[in-house]
Amino acid sequence: MIKVRFFASFREKLNCEQLTLQEGEYAPLLSALKSQLADQGEGWREVMMSERTLVAINQTMTRQDVTLRSGDEVAFFPPVTGG
Picture 1 (cartoon, one colour):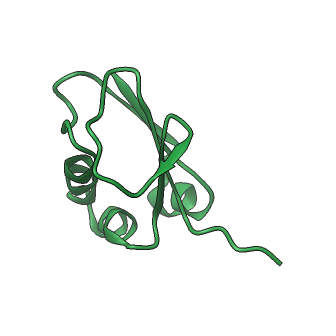
Picture 2 (cartoon, helix red, strand yellow):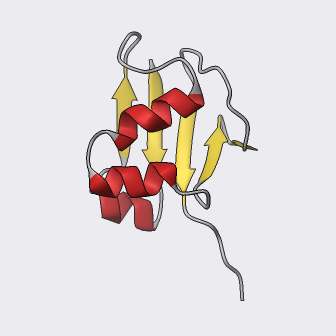
């Protein structure tokens, strides 16, 4: 099982705060999971395929394609701006 969480404007855009996916329901690589989620519709595709989308695995930022393991938390959130 993995948890997939969406933050800030992504949560509103997708109308989804969190997904829980069981073994066999998710692709084993982060890139494949993003493609799998993108297939759910236009808003999902926009969020998942954007180069600006930030991703953290178990609260550690990543830009690499990583292998997902049971118990992982995958978090997607928009770029953070400061001021």
